[in-house]
Amino acid sequence: MSIFPEPTAVAFDDDSFWVTLSDGRVVGVPIAWYPRLLKGTSAQRLDFFLSPSGIHWEGLNEDISVRGILASHIEFSPETRNAA
Image (cartoon, rainbow, N blue to C red):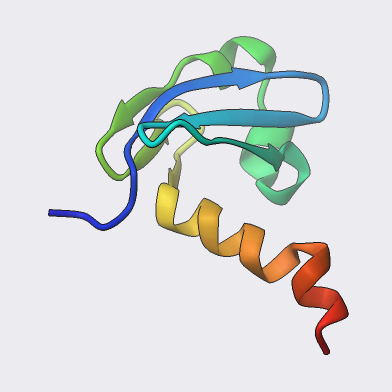
């Protein structure tokens, strides 16, 4: 049993993708953090599947875990940067 919520939906805008999690949170992630997604076409970005642990793009050879998304938000959050 994972301690992380599962992804339930993914949406894109021009600069980010938005992951809806099973606990109700919606997390925005800059596409630029993932060069394979950045270089992919809109159609390639929309060709993904969800698993309990993350998002997978077979055509782009990209797998992004919920754990990684949440960890990156802690690492790059303004609160964390200002705490140093």
